[in-house]
Image 1: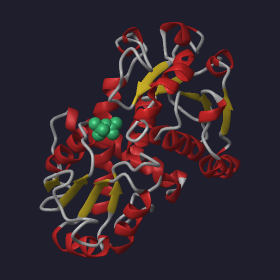
Image 2: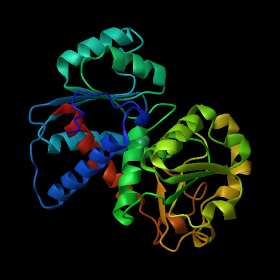
Image 3: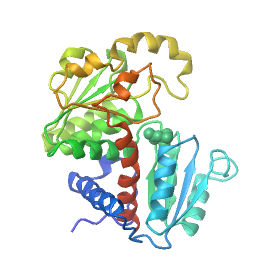
Image 4: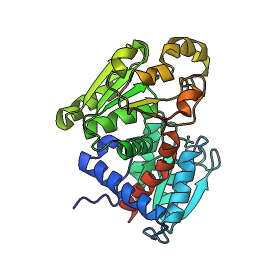
Length: 310
Ligand code: CP
């Protein structure tokens, strides 16, 4: 039997296809239980510490509310309000937090520092987003797709725009589960080999594929999921004008969705810049599943906590 108890959740590549499917199957069970009004205390009296170095809406709410629904407790450690990495070493912080909490969720804009914390901690550490990846987001992205397409294997997933953390992690989960992942954007912003090499290795096992193209028609042909994210992020503000110009043709519009499979769905990790990377018509249109996707952050993260902490 597959067990994930005590593991860190730093990167999807640390998890096998079977382990990822276990998280997604557990998500389905927990979501169904909640919709039927059952609140099983799978994590009764367990505690979660949530560290954020940046603001968050979805990640914070899904972990805080999620563990409370499971019978546990949560402490929110606000951006800039703990000593981590400033007055106290990462090592000492990890050791101390491990004495208080049964797991630590951390959003931190430095993957290597987060890894240092995870290596020193004696309880599971969950990656709530770094400058490289967003594995929790990818779980919700794929779970939301599974609610629309069964099976998902062999389906075509197209990410429009910059190589953001959700793009990296979406490509990774697709390569684990055997989906065909396409990154559509100008060549300059294509996903780099530090990720595409991993996709290639996983695709040999899963049967998935990875492709970069700047050709919108080619990307859209037969696409089942169109996904986009913001065109600039923390530290890239000075590139705003250049990015707006280069990414403009890749704004997700109704015309783009019309080129895809008739059952195509639209996803965005949110927050979105409406009218920039995507139009209101798409965000609020019949193909959009963005609010299901946001809600599913909580269901997938509850499953993750149950499996790692119980
Ligand atoms: N998608 C996502 O991580 O949202 P938040 O920044 O609101 O947590």
